[in-house]
Amino acid sequence: MLGYVTLISLIASGIVGHSAATQEWWKDSFIYQIYPRSFKDSNGDGIGDLNGITSKLDHLAQLNVSAFWISPIFVSPMVDFGYDIANFTNIDPIFGSLTDFELLVKKAKSLNLKVILDFVPNHSSDKHPWFEKSIKRIKPYDNYYVWKDGKIVNGVRQPPNNWISVFRNSAWTWNEQRKQYYLHHFTSAQPDLNYRSAELNEEMKNVLTFWTNRGVDGFRIDAIILAFEDSRFPDEPVIPNTGLPSNDYNTLRHIYTQHQNETYQLVQSWRKHLDTQPGSKKILMTESYSGLKELTESMKYYQYGSDVPFNFMLITDLNNHSKAIDFKRSIDKWINNIPKGDYQANWVVDNHDNRRVTSRFGVKRADQMTMIAAILPGIGVIYNGNEIGMEDTWLSWNETVDPVGCVAGPIDYQFTSRDPARTPFQWDNSTSAGFSTSNKTWLRVNPNYRTLNLAAQKSVSFSHYTITKKLIALKTSNLMINSTTEVILVGENVLGIVRRKSKNSLFVLLINFLDTPITIDAMSWMNIPEIMSVYVSSLETKIPAGTKVNTSKLLLSGAASIIITNYSYNYLQ
Ligand code: NOJ
Image (cartoon, rainbow, N blue to C red):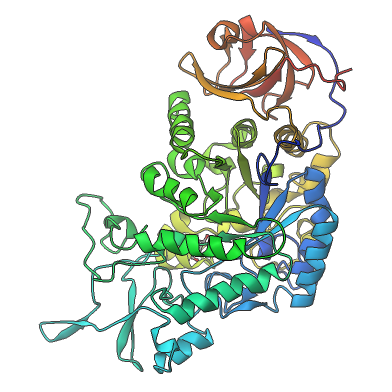
């Protein structure tokens, strides 16, 4: 292939070891999200569980991620598959028991993996005893939720204002027993908790302590931006001409329900609380979909104690129509807006709420987002299945269980359901992809598992798995620590990211945004050496590691993505 000169050899192994300069373990690391229902089923009921996770922790250790965060595992009626919690301090029997959790933590520690739990403070389940007591106005629970009288319009009772739930329709549901409306930003089975209650605040701090006492290394905080509402409860302004149905969340400007000042203070109070806990500093990761549009709000969470205000730009702001310049703008914008101080950038590749990266950017570009997350400074966050290029699973209306899919109806569910990205992890080509011994799983296994599975990818030298391993190895090595970062457009269609430590140590990511080949003079555009070696390339690009390339006339195949370096590895033989 023109541009790639000599083949030196394959890199036999990844780079391992953390930099001595790393202050917190999460600086320059990869964090892996586990969706527990779909990771590994140990008891054959078709639903993943804690013992299943424990049995597969070796996989995470081999990938060399530093930590994993688990979507909720607590007692739940499962209306929103665990995000409706009926007991914040116990494990749902579907997933196992507190003893199983203890074993999980023990195994994780033995593998040097940090454990992060999902903390869901915005709401509980309507089956939580607190809510049941709140309905009965039993003190202090009467004030644990957000209750309001209705508005009487022309003699008819109406919700107190026009607020809409993230999952569509009014955010208020009438309770006949208490004779008031309660607020719910998600399903009506997820009543919003009221942080203006001092007692509730205490309860939730105790929840944090309960889990840190059990060895947890930090929390991902769910839906934090909605924790407080303006206490005057005004209508939110309607955005004109969205073309959306009037019951859609995106028809309102959420100026009274998102990012209220007290919300930041709440995060800060948890930060302070966790800082009093024994052991090493606990990580706080906050879920905020405000993204690049409301960057100021997102960035503020850093200053109030979030270590990782999730950066969802690869999910919400960029897609397969984005051009190299869109990526450059978005990356620069995020990096340039991080407040001054010891704050880390982060790059979320995927999660359980969105279409998988293979759908958002196309199968050919499956590895590219992890490559971006790996080369850029800070934390990369991947979702189970990214490491093998898992694809969304088409599910029929009858198979749909996600409340967001169900509320949309038999046609529109296809555009809103989150089920396609939640199907079981594909371990091998045995029954149910090795996820369960049962051939009936809570969501159907993607039929492509026979060829697309971890075992198959481990058995070959070039696969999404081997690529991901090398990317994680690169980030967690000390080779890019203290390097500068330059995001460069190499012409209109190629994005370049250079991490420059010294003249003799630089790593360069190049992505061709065209689906057709292109020859570029990366040497002049990026001021990089003429001869460099491939560290890793995407599966689509398939250039063996160690291949020498001439950067002054570099041929990138369609959708190609490579990381090259001039670093002289001792393992480049
Ligand atoms: C965000 C979670 O990621 C999502 O899965 C859930 O439905 C909502 N928050 C409500 O908890």
